[in-house]
Length: 376
Image 1 (spheres, rainbow, N blue to C red):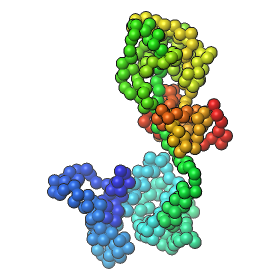
Image 2 (image 1 turned 60 degrees about the vertical axis):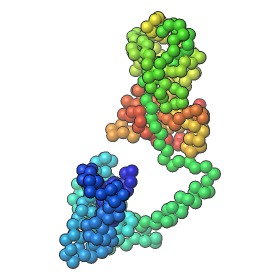
Image 3 (image 1 turned 90 degrees about the horizontal axis):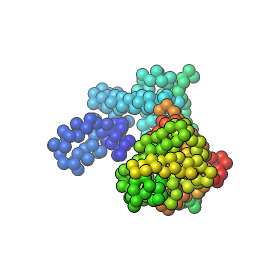
Image 4 (image 1 turned 30 degrees about the vertical axis):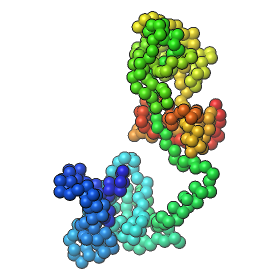
C-alpha cells in the first residue's frame, strides 16, 4: 500500500495498481467522489465477479464461471509480480508467509501464487498445502519441501490480540520509545563559520553574509559567499560560508580535505577548538591566517528534548546508526547525541562518511541501541 490502500494488489473491492491514464479517462466521465467510490468499493474482485468473497469466487470458478477464473488468475498474478519485485529489491527471499483470511484458508491461492517461483528456491509441498490448518493452538505451518531454500509458512492472524497487546504496552509505559527509529540524514561538505572581524578582513568592513539557502537547523543558513582555504600542501576553492556569524572562527573539513591541504585536523564536536591547527583563508578583499579552528566534525545527531525522549537517549550519549544502501550497508559507531529545543532531528555526516555508506541528504538512518552507551 502507498499513500492509500488503493496502491498494490487487487483486493476484495479495491482496484490495486492502475495505469494513471485509466484515472484520467475515468475522470472525464465521473466526478471525483464517484471515482473514489468506484475504485475503493466497486472494483477489485467485486468489480470482476460481483462479490468480494474469495470463497464464493473459488466455488463459482470450479463450476466454470469465466469471470471468477479471470479474477483468481489476476489476483494471484499480481501477488507473484510483487513477490518477484520485492525479491529483486531485497536481494533474495528467506520466507514467504501467507496470513489473513485468504492466506490462511485458500490452498488454491497459495498454490497459484507460488507457481513459477522455483527460481527463487521456493518449492511448495502440495500435500502439506492442501492439509494446512492453523489456529491459536497451531499458529504456524511450514508448507515447503525439505529441499526448498525458502520457508513457505501459513500464519494464524489475530489482529485484535496484536492491537490489544500494543495498546497495553503503550499504556504501561511512562514514555514511548520508538522500536525502529529512523533519522533524516544531512551531508555536510567542507564549510566555514567566521566571526565578524575575520569576515571584515576577507570581504570589507561591516560586511554582511547573504543567504543562499536556509538549513534545517533553526536560524542557520548557507551563504552565497565562498572562500579559498590555503594549507601547507595545497588549496581548496569555493568553500561555502555558513551564517550567521559566530564568536570564533571554525573550519570544518573531511579527511580527504586534510590530505589536500596538508593539515592534521582532529575529530571534534563543533566549538571544541583547543589545540586544533589553523589555515589561511582568502577572500575577495584579503587573507587571514587562523592560528587554530580547523576540525573534522564528529558525526552527531541533533535532537529536540522530545526526540530524545521518543528515542530513549540523552544529550552527550554515544550511539550507533545503521545505514542501508543497495551495495554498502554500513553501521557508524561513536555518533554523539546533541539535545536542544532549537535543534531539528537530523544525523550529520561529512562527505567522506556519506560516500562510504552511499547515502545522500534526505536518506534515513536507523538508530541502534549501543550495548554499553556512554556519554561524550
